[in-house]
Length: 456
Image (cartoon, rainbow, N blue to C red; front, side, top):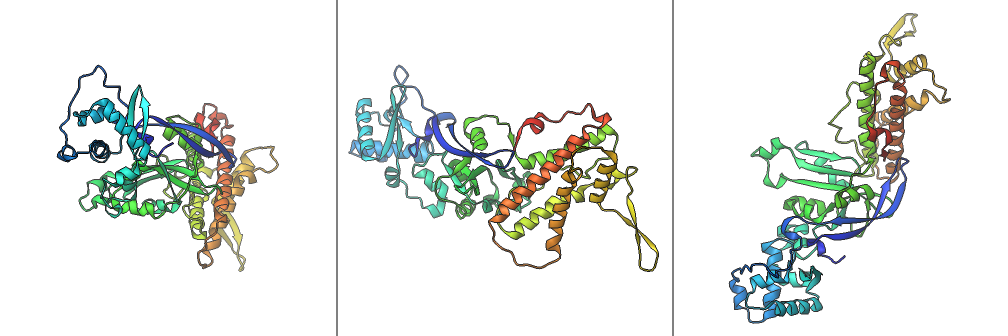
């Protein structure tokens, strides 16, 4: 695809990869259709329609060379009249009425031969798209003044060109409570909250919103991707921030992100983080049906924790922070009131002086005791298939709490996080499936996307 063919509906050939329920990577090629709204789509030929003559700009009238007049009109349309959009020969004739359609068409072909424009026929009418070497002669705005991504568009880049970034670009917004922040591992968005948008103390340059998606390098490293037009909408300081994390080259878009963003398709794949949070919700729903207290103190429905996502940087400190959060969602989130009357909540511990100390039992011990005494499961690894993940996360959380270590950059933490998230999710899913066998839970039905969708 040529650089600026985005003004008409067009096809993008995108190399993509998607992650399935097993955590593997599946390669593929997605043909994605993308376009623009309103005047950016090609219009029919002007044959048989009423002509609308636009006043010629003085600098166009003063030009003697018809070729210069045509190239200037093309640049003006792209840079000022209808930003970043091509135009037809009839559009040019409206702006240069003293030149015939055939004359303009010939001049456009001459510009095409020189590499100043690209052209194509749509419904028997030629459409024109300026190239960088033409636009450079007419755009004197400096990148430092308008931003890297605005400048790229001003020099002819496609509005739907995909740009790629290291995931660290998201930290600034994830850690700033003024922004809505959502990142489920497939797609996400950032947007200033209404409270802060209306606050006069908020700088105009911080009032922004942007959509982004997932992509992968050849080595399967996760990246963030966003289309050029969305980046162009960012204020200058934020364009500079994103540019500092940019990764050059062509990379593989996540297949499900590409299908939704470029083809407008609904996909059945669901982020493992969304599925994890929904398992908490569903387990508490089952508890309500069985007349029990909720098993989890908080299900976070509609408000997932901001840091519950793939790591933005491969460091030991980042992984430790994620493990801390995961433990809060699992063992620390277990509700002791659920176990009251089912298992002993306290344990007697003998002391050195012969007295007995009564201590509260830990939540993982309560869950394990409940599963052993209340359920009969033939699986050989039960109940460790559930509680094992809870204990593993708790142990990993406790380790850094008892030592002081310098942070370390380690690519292995990405795989460690993937394995840990997969194990924790499978434990929750098994727990939900187990609870659905309760006699009073027979009317329960999980969401279809959770039961049958692709989780990954």
